Length: 127
Image 1 (cartoon, rainbow, N blue to C red):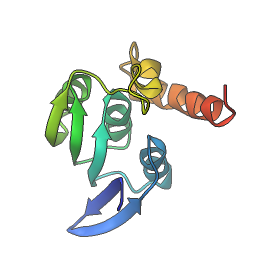
Image 2 (spheres, helix red, strand yellow):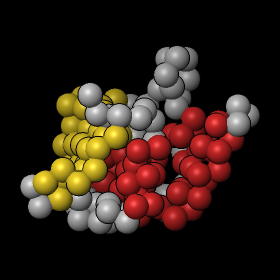
Image 3 (cartoon, rainbow, N blue to C red):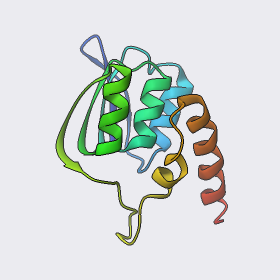
């Protein structure tokens, strides 16, 4: 029933049923991401960069992209996944996820976070 769960010291400290990247952003902004193990349905590069920014301990994604795996490996974040994919696709299945497009050329977690916030605002406005 949840799309994102964060576990710290064997206790669930955060859960969110929202779709997309917003649960990870909320978790980061709450200051609770550090040292957490995050379980999410989909982990792409965008989520991986936020996990790195927030100093997450590790993560599990039901689906995880190759670019997320690369970021997590580079940053020393433990990870596992159910299914690996080349890229995260949008909800309509017609193109690459807009969040993934936003960070395609970004490897700095702070820059990625700023760009993702701008993209979320634009999408919320219907732009």
